[in-house]
Length: 378
Image 1 (cartoon, rainbow, N blue to C red):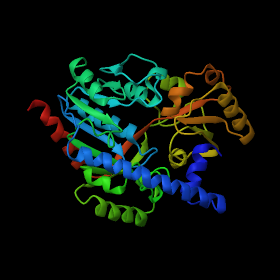
Image 2 (tube, rainbow, N blue to C red; image 1 turned 90 degrees about the horizontal axis):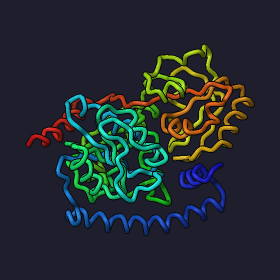
Image 3 (tube, rainbow, N blue to C red; image 1 turned 45 degrees about the vertical axis):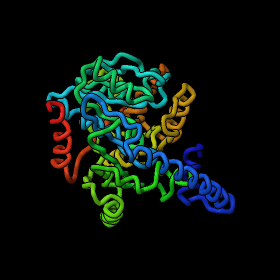
Image 4 (cartoon, one colour; image 1 turned 135 degrees about the vertical axis):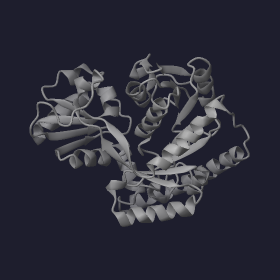
């Protein structure tokens, strides 16, 4: 069990025994201090102290828990909608795991990639690869990234990736994603749970989008909505699912070709799933929901940096479990594609691109985005 899985095993309460109990108690003490610090910081921004407005409208997409809630496919969805309405959006990303994000760096200029994943980090590079004429800028200081995007790239609307807690840059719309499979981070703020801030922070949200709603029963989903209504009565709640856009070989994905409805050249796939994401169970659910068999899974930690040894392990596990193919996520494909060992494997490697599909509230959601877009011409 890797460190991330062990941590979640403890904070979720699944780990039993005196040592786990002591660990939770210690983490709880740290959690109180962390929450107090976050609340003091939020009070400052609530007074608009230190908030800087960009020259163009800003849409923020974020969450209240650590881990994968679907920000990347949601940011892509929003930018594709803005592109279709003839805007020139730019995504402002922190550039997690980037080589150097102290200064603003252009990852893609109007849809043309300018750096490698090693420079930008996997998520920012993936967004740059998958969009038409959207620009992507990384940098810890989002205000500087905003200035670069508007002054140099000609962007007329900004999408702040993972921006709910980054409050220095003012925003016109705050969208918060909630993972229905783990909506409230085990009920505690970091490090006792996965909440980035107390649930009272949801009062800042303009829109709440529940993701992965097909992964929980309807009665649980109803309960989540009721709790959200208590935490954020001002915010409308939309619901979505993660939807496969098809499947393709790693080589096809690298060439930016369209995915297919079924794995080409593989009539009866028996997959080994490989992922280094925050919620690996969600990826397995996606694969099995498409009707494919998963014989085994290799779950690495979130944002895992793959090595040749990892590729050898993938091959060994596939052979041992009787898999005839490997399937991975787009985020993992970014890093795996950089390794020659993956291309030398004597077993096919497939990628499943994921998109967001609304089940409730899509037209209302688009209206919110359109209203922000109208400010461009004001």
